[in-house]
Image (tube, rainbow, N blue to C red):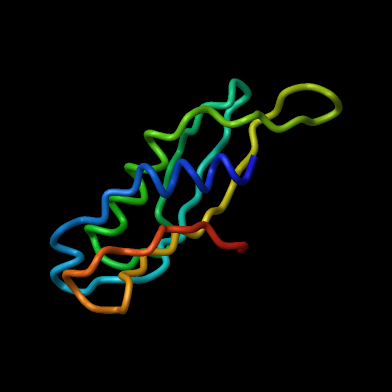
Length: 106
């Protein structure tokens, strides 16, 4: 569930070097569809921060393991999902390691 997802984000994030050097931080709002088979499709950045952070958010979603599909009347169904992903540098300055990237409630 949520713990596995958080672990995936923490272990998989690759904070772009250029973004670290430029002290780029913020919340990338993404939207995607969880298909009937649990795969992710139609990934979109609804509100981005910078090209580097937006691209990393999309990369994270593209490389995610399958989700559990939604259900409608007991049958698998496609579900649209909105996920904010927060990129934050520890201490708010470039060159320091980032704190974990975390999803937040919409």
